[in-house]
Image (cartoon, rainbow, N blue to C red; front, side):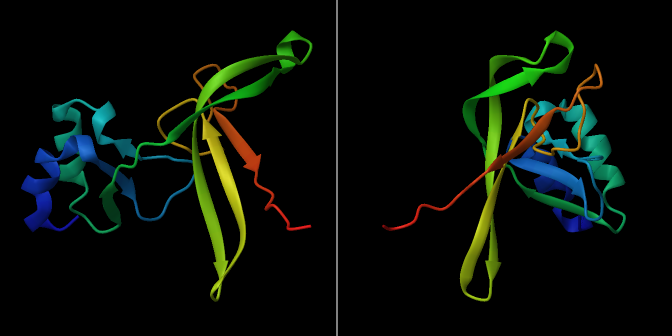
Length: 131
């Protein structure tokens, strides 16, 4: 985050996400609307060093999805999750897409919930074919 942008980033917390430029598993990602102003400003202050990105927050879609519980004989319950859609483009062609689902505000399938269970997963997107 460039120092000239700090006041703007601080004032627009609800519309922004702060994340390390290089990272994995959603670690270090802070969704502004889920942070207090104090916590946000502390994170923005640390982000003046190289390697941080600020980006616009996009409200994810909500879907009710089946979730199997391994501790309850794999019984399925239906849970509202946040979902995004990602496309893989090769040259000028869309090759495939992927959807991620998560119970929390950070859509990352490698994160765990507080009890150690996975917080998200993949949804397989299969393109329709003309017959």
